[in-house]
Amino acid sequence: MKDTVVQILNFFGWAWWVEVKTENPRCTYYFGPFANQQEAQEMSSGYVDDLKDEGAQGISVYIQRMKPDDLTVFDELGETPDHERFPTLSGQLS
Image (cartoon, rainbow, N blue to C red; front, side, top):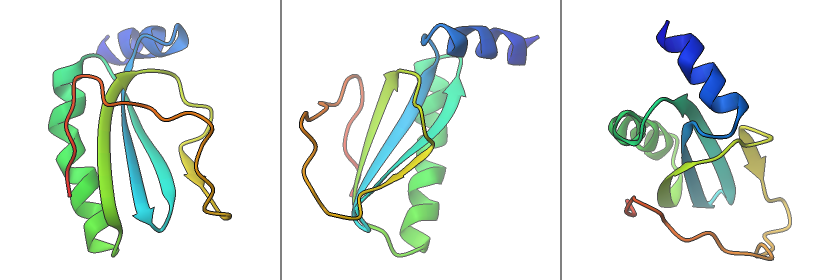
């Protein structure tokens, strides 16, 4: 039943996702969907640990309601995005 609720929330863009940005490599990763902010926050540390184990540096974590198009976005050119997202209801991890 919980999976169905999460899928419905995700369909409408109301599910919570963990967005993890790394400076090296310059990537954005999306993990989710989650039914609530607390569940996403609890899971985020495991994702950060995995990325650290892989050698990623400059890690920022954002917990937000969204519906990402891709789960991994690699910035080959190292360009700064046109817009900057500000953390909503989350902090940064280094």
